[in-house]
Length: 92
Image (cartoon, rainbow, N blue to C red):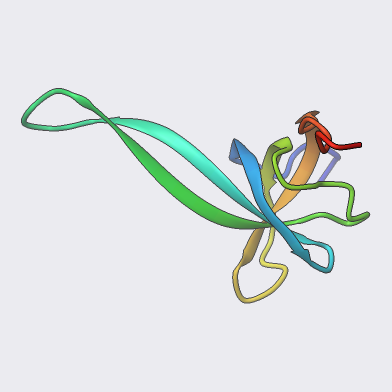
């Protein structure tokens, strides 16, 4: 098997909701789903735990996640890159 032949991995974008764990962040992923009967779009929210090797992510950062092998009981995603940093504290 050569590099890049691992199969198609899922990619998600979301906002970091918690960075209190060591090397792990909780990311909220929002998506729009069409209601089957009423044909209106509904906002669905999913929380996933993602691996953050260098503890670089902070609350409010917009991140790109990539699917990976199970790293722990609930961790199935890895932070690929930080798309947008959260605005810093107002008082500083």
